[in-house]
Each structure stands twice: as structure tokens, then as C-alpha cells.
Image 1 (cartoon, one colour):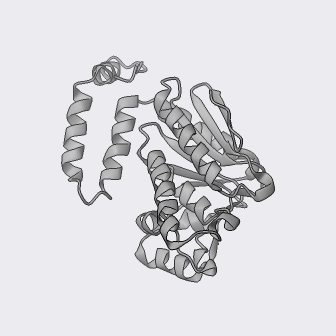
Image 2 (tube, rainbow, N blue to C red):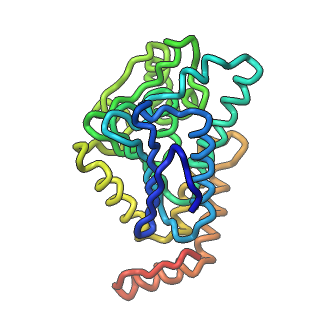
Length: 260
């Protein structure tokens, strides 16, 4: 496993926990941290032993409280575009992973932190979590996919309100809007994320990955999602896991999936 300056990686029982480890900066995303997240997600892609991922932040105050304002303040129009595109590319890697990624949101998930959480497949929030896209306070707008994913997750009207007002919302409000999947006490956060991942990991890995692909296709204007679904269904039916899953059901036993 590679070494990291701004992340902590811990692989146990098929679950890789990635922790943004800049607690003194409220885990703000600087350029180096974005690069390390890319490297960590590529490691997820390349490592068969990894079956699922938990992404969280160090400490109890912040998941990720935003981007590094000092770096953003130095951007010009020319390099700002590439700055946004780099972050979008890394977050798309998370979204497109065929292994489930759960954001364990502890504290502030603001700006780039909210965008990072939304790139994950599911979000479990602690009771003290706060979500928001406050970029207009800086004369900016979300640049790592926030205008797109927040709208997809909670609808145009509410997404527009949150981004135009820069309001923060509580974990319970995020749950009601569909931005968070679960809200738990802080001390139960990682346990809940692990519990969900273990349940997902007990299912057929190929089917899990294809579900992610098909759901993502809903939001790809260049893709026919129904055709993607039909193709994925056919791929499942050609797999050993399909034979095992249907046989186990008929024989009233637990399936032993191998991922192909």
C-alpha cells in the first residue's frame, strides 16, 4: 500500500476505510489531498481484496469542511477551469466505482466536502453533521459537481435554494431531503457504515457493480439507461453468481458468491 501525507488507509475484512487526515484544517481539500484521493480510489479499483469503502474525516468536527481557501484565492480564470475539472474527475472515479463507497459524515460537510460526500454511493451522517454549499459567500459556485449532484439528490427547487442562500442544513434535514441515508449518534457512525457495507458485500459482487452502473446511467444524457439495464441483466444471467444465487434459493441455503 502506498504512503499518504493527508489520508489514512485501513483495510480490514474487505473494507477499506479512507480518512481525510487534516483535522487541524477541518480536513479541507487542498490540491495534494485531491491527488491522494485519486491515488486511493485507483488502489480500490486495482485491489481485488477490497470489496467496499468507507470515506470519512479525522476527528469529530468535520468530514471535510470545504476546499482550501488559500489555494482557491490564487486561482485565475484559466487555471480555475482545470482546478474544477481535476476535482470533478476524481469525484467521478468514486461515483463510478463498481465497489460500494459510503461516506461516514462526521461534522461539517461543506463546499467540496458536501460534493465529496455526494460522489459516494450512500451517506451515513452523525447527529452533529452539517451539510451545505456556501460557495456564493466567496463569490464562487460549487465546482466539483455540486450543482449537478445536489440537484439530482434533492431536486431542483431545494438544491437551488441551498446553493443560492448558502444555508447549512442539519443531519435530520439532510435525511428528510434524501441527501443522507441514515443519521446515527457520533459514536455509532463507523459501525453503521460498516454494517451497511457488510450487508451489501454479502450479495453478488458483479450484480452490485452493475446496479451502480445502471443507476448512474439515469443521469448520463448520452446513455440509454434502459438499454444499459438490459445489457447488465444479460451479463448477470451469464455469470457463475447467477447460477449460484438461483441454486441457493431453490436449495434454501446461503449463496456463496465469487464475483463472476
